[in-house]
Image (cartoon, rainbow, N blue to C red; front, side):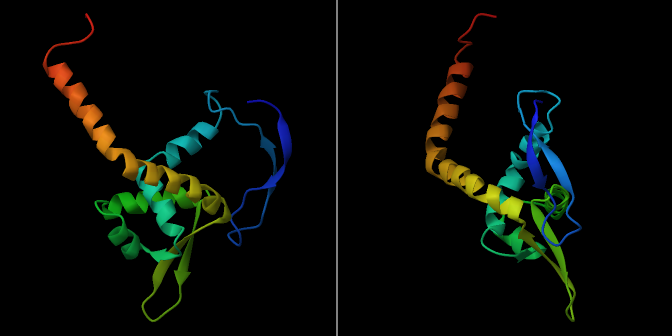
Length: 149
């Protein structure tokens, strides 16, 4: 994975005492590099929708579920836990007459949400071209294989 560069604080603010670690130089092409785990987490469809949604401000679970159409409660909960575990979001239990939980981006999550929002906008802008490419490809496949087997 390479050498080290500098000391970095990885803990989300206020979550637990900050532990200083040596930052390793990442290489996503190295099969032993945990940067691949980060890519797997953030490349999930649901994480790519949850993080930019939380960039708009803290939300309760029900608000997120309404905002992100098609996500089940189970998948939302699993994804929120994974994002919290990786320091991208912070879960806060709110004391009130009716207790509830809010989620917000951590500083680390905020640093990522802008890049994911760009990907969301790209998908919204180019989905007709992608749909057309799939239709053409599927039509070619139905008319016979393009490549000899």
